[in-house]
Image (tube, helix red, strand yellow):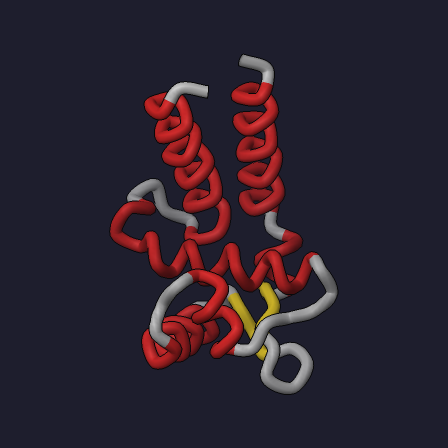
Amino acid sequence: MKPADACMLLIDVTRALGTGLLKTDRFGTRAEDLLILCGVCVGQAEGRPMAAYKLAQYIGQARPSVVRRLNRLEAAGLVRRGRPGGWVLTDELLSSSGFRRSMREAERRVRKAGKR
């Protein structure tokens, strides 16, 4: 894959996820929120919800920034505290048609890029 193709794929997938997770087409201004939500999603999918300090390490951000953003995302109804210290996506977000549609679109774009 050429570097430009990889960059285009990253932007396309980020756009699809931004639409589903953040419900906005202006995902660029919320890139850090999107990274945190993706980290939460990974921990949840692996059955090991991550605490704020683990999320901070995973996505390469300072823990205080991650904590502030998690609190804002919680207030927006996108994440909630799972097991002690761990964070998960809310049931409302996971069951929303926009979330499911964006996940399918992101997967489609990755598969398409893999066929090139």
